[in-house]
Length: 361
Ligand SMILES: *Cc1c(COP(=O)(O)O)cnc(C)c1O
Image (tube, rainbow, N blue to C red):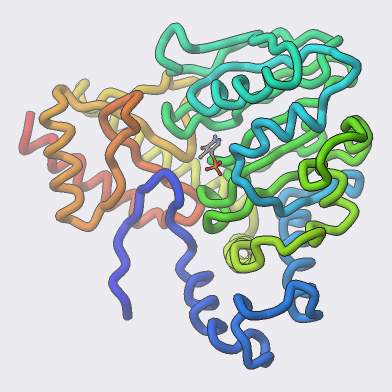
């Protein structure tokens, strides 16, 4: 058996071991074809069945209504930063964004290429340590946009803001898609790079309500229209076949353990272990996110000094707890505890942090 460590990287991130083992088993001969899935035509019936099952899994796991379409795209969530405003623009109306961190800012920057952007709420005043309350979207925006979970700062929307009238809400769920049960009907568009919570790098999942597919200007390049990919079931061109396949295995595993409701319970337990530890450390560990905005997926915290932070990351590494260095804009440490992180990993980390505090305070 290969050595496996606890991987707390923010993304690409840990994947469910059963999914990796299945991929290993099928690597050379996918379903009796005598070929790897990597070698298989994306027009073959074997590939097609796998592709359809991947989309069906997303639909079942998130209980996605029939009038929403599921797309597997390339270019990362970062490409949706421009494709969302491009596809959702309407009659010269402005776009309304909530700024909750680095990824929101990147999305805002791209949206400005297509129209006027109004930032209706921001938590920049306190280094993005909270999710703004009472967000006031207006009824005459082309669309509203939020970042559901802020990977770098460790904040997450606990409830969805109201959007008036028929303004569609777009949400970047890259770092928390399927971490908890959500009502998809609250959104016009959901997008997520797969490499944090559902699969490997190289594919972006997009969920879009079909009435929104008619807005895009005619003179838009074919590949940039969501509608192109909807009409061809994400097989307009050669897609990221292998990445979709790993998503299928990872999502199949999620379904086998009870789906999103079950993983939500586990995620809440996992996050509580670390937040309780922070709260009971007499200030040795200081959480970055305000308690009412805490993320289930990325737990961010600082130690008394940068020297201790460096030491802590280094000693964790010696114990096979990998990827705990915080993002440079927050410093400190970050434990990314996505769906595929087993609770044993979180307990091991908590035990290590307790011991580190005893030895260093
Ligand atoms: C990682 C991340 C992105 C960037 O995703 P890419 O697929 O690398 O483009 C965007 N938004 C959020 C919230 C992220 O965590």
